[in-house]
Image (cartoon, rainbow, N blue to C red; front, side, top):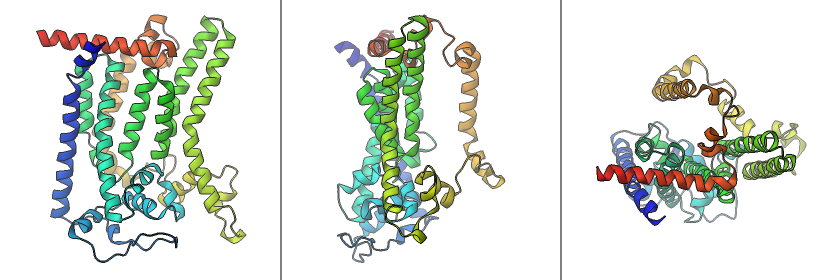
Length: 379
């Protein structure tokens, strides 16, 4: 087992170096273009005092060092909301669209705006480096080929959306929690996996979709127990456990929505109550996205968004043709969602595995991968 780990470490330093070099390159480009041109968004200069009287921050502080001013000039677009939430809490309705994990992390360091921004840059770039390491380990567990896993990880390090992973956004925290959670999930460490996946729902709203991994495996395990093992009790137990784990993943996001409802709806005068407070399911996040940013099902498909679709077309094309290639190569598994498969085929896929097999299976794929590395090294 020790040799397996050392063999895997043959690639992990390269993964870490690639992730670190990609962040250094990106931060250098950010600084260069910031010097070369002024940002389109000028929100950095808009920072009124906090509404709460108990705050000790001084948002309008005029005596700032040039370094602090330069750092604060990078607080633009969504960064304004994250820093404001860390500095003053959730004051306005639209600020609840920006989930609290990143503001919570950076608020531990300092109440000063420039240090909040600096700590956010440090946390996000460190989180990205660790996310790349989890991406590599997860790729080995699924692909069972260290060379392909390495190439995929390097592409992840230099992906077209890299700017969001090194700015004051929540993508890096979401990446490390989601990738780490899925890695531990396929490794059979379910409690740790559920914890990380639940926290991902406090970083970004789509973190709740990570419950789909649990639901998918639960369906297959329950199907196997009920129709192949003819064990109704075991199938029911699997479903209950899977439902509980899925609920745990949803819980942090739902709790934050309840927090928003309490702050914005409870104790208000009738003329102050917002429309969403009266809804049958008062979901603040959906209302904010629709009311303030026009986000909704198929709303983005407009002619004016054509340039953005053209920018995304290379990645969309790669994703589309990858799915088509997989569907053609394994049509029975693809179109049946894995239900129309043999036991041998299921045993080769970590997502289908039962808990008692997951950890040993991932360890087995890792061992095979290290053997390949060793063999190529000798050649």
